[in-house]
Length: 133
Image 1 (cartoon, rainbow, N blue to C red):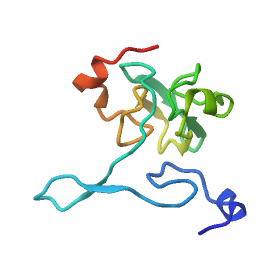
Image 2 (cartoon, rainbow, N blue to C red; image 1 turned 135 degrees about the vertical axis):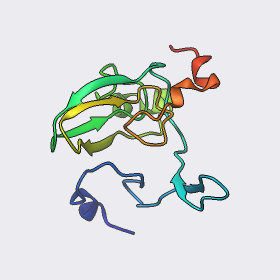
Image 3 (cartoon, rainbow, N blue to C red; image 1 turned 90 degrees about the vertical axis):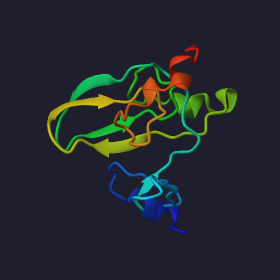
Image 4 (cartoon, rainbow, N blue to C red; image 1 turned 30 degrees about the horizontal axis):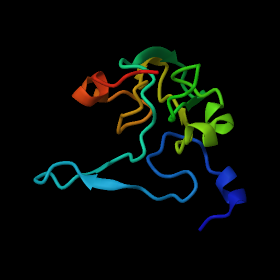
């Protein structure tokens, strides 16, 4: 297991691995394809039922909110730190860099399997029927 000091030196890019352990949760996409697709567990609170379209600049680092409680959606404002015990938040934000300067659809339902980008998970019945607090 890596030490905390070595984890700080890891470059912050979009990753589907746990920031602390480096573990990846993979499931089969299709029985016939044989491809492994990351399956996110402990998905965050649904902040909105539609993605946010934002122009991101190439090379700039962004911090995407994974818990869904941030007041600055889709970006993190630190709510996961100050309300972790009261709201029982298990998710941590994700650092990522935009690959090119253009407009991206960032997920605000927090149910995506391609964080921080929207993959259409907000169209599912359980997300659309969810009550946003």
